[in-house]
Image (tube, rainbow, N blue to C red; front, top):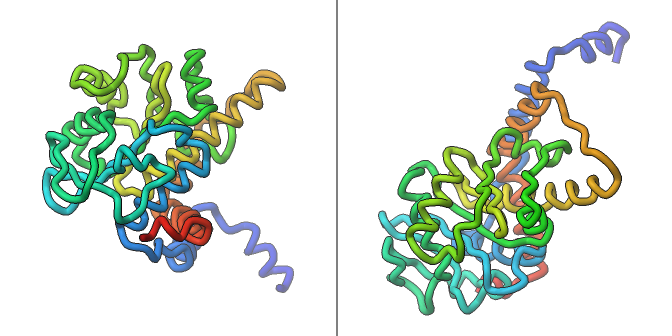
Length: 265
C-alpha cells in the first residue's frame, strides 16, 4: 500500500465503510441450514444451555403458516427436552391442532401480544437468573456495554408483578407493559423478547441475560457509567442488522446441533 493509498484508506468516512461492511456481511453471514421447526428446537436447547430453563417455566412461540395458529414448546418437554418432533401447534384458544401434548399455560399472554403487534412473529419468555435478580430488586436493564446496545431505548419495564400469567388480565398488562418495544423486563418474573423472526427474538433473549449478568457483576465493582446516546444508537442499529442477527443465530444453532443432535429428531 502506497503512502497515498494508506492515507485514503484511513480517511474514508464511516458511511462508506458501513456500506462495505453491509455488503460483506450480507454475503458472508449465512442463515441457518436447518428447517423452521429444527431451528425452534435448537433455539430451545440453546436457551437451556444458557441457563434459561431450570424448570418447566419459559416458552417460545412463533406464528405458523396457517393463519391464527402458533408453534410452541410441549409443556412436558420443557426447553431442555424440546425436539423438532415434539413441538405442538395451537390455535388462538390454546387448543392443540398438530402434535401431541399441551402448550405451557403461560403462553396465553403471548397471544395478547400477537393480537396488538402484527409485526411480531416470535416471542421468547424465560426466567434466567441474572435477569430474575434484576426483576426482584426493581432495577431496569442498564445498557452500558457494547454487547448490550441492542436494548438501548428499546427495553420496557413492567414495574408491578401481575401474578401468575395464565389468565387474560395478566396478558393485557404484559402486552401493555411491552408497548412498542422489542423487549421487556417483567417485575418479580423474568424477560420477554419479541422479533419479526425466531432468530431475532432468540438473539435478544440470549443477549438480555448476558447484559443482566454484566450489570450485576459491574455493580459489585462500582457505579455503572453511561454511554453517549449518539454512539449507543449507532451501535444498536448495527447489532440489529438482519445479517448480524441471522449470522449469530446460525453460529449458535450449528454449535448446538453438534452438542444436542437429538433435538433434530
